[in-house]
Image (cartoon, rainbow, N blue to C red; front, side, top):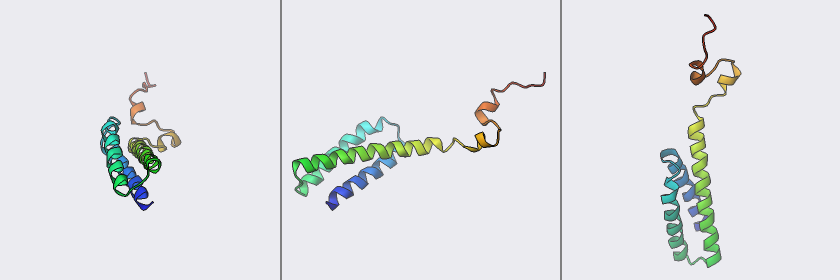
Length: 102
């Protein structure tokens, strides 16, 4: 059971690292590699068919969730809640406001 938890945590770390560096298309390459690596490791530890499939599915799900969480945190870092609180528009909306002094 320990090896299953290690594989799931490793998949989460791979998902986070991928989310910080690459775009979503990298999951197309990463997911089969995780599945194959997990299958080899689980076969070496003599996991059964159903247990192995469940662990591999868990690894893939955790990897993808970690990817999307890392990508979300990375891209929302630039969005500030202070723009809405202080009443001042953000940098993007300042340029679109016309001058009221004619």
